Image (cartoon, rainbow, N blue to C red):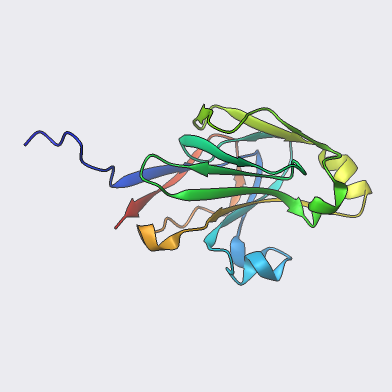
Length: 160
C-alpha cells in the first residue's frame, strides 16, 4: 500500500574518476568494447582516486587490486576495472581502500591507481564500468561524453 518492501526501480550512476568519459565501444580491449562481459562506459583518468560509480556493497576485491565488484540493493552487479591488461602488474600501482561487505556510495573512495606508473609500464589506465548482469536493466543511460569530475551523476538506469 505504501510501497514498503518494493524493489528500487532506478539507480543513479556516477563518474568513478575525474577524466574523459568515452563509450565502452571505444575501449582498446575487445572483451569490453564488444560488450562480452556486459554494457557500460569508460573513463580515461586524469587523477589517481577511484570512487564507487553506484551505491551498494563491495562484493569482490580482486587479489591483483585492478578490479572491484559492487552489488546494488536491487542486485545489479557492477565491475570497476582499472586499466587494460593491468592484471599483469600483480597489484603494483594499485591500492584498494575497501573490503568485501563494505557499503559504498558515489562519495566513497574505493581505490587509487598510479596512472603515471601504469602508463610508464606500457599499460592503458582506462577505467571501465561494466554492468555484468544486463538482464536486470530495462533502460541504460547514455552518459554525456567528454570531461567529467569524479562522483558527478551521469545518468539513471531503470530496472526491469
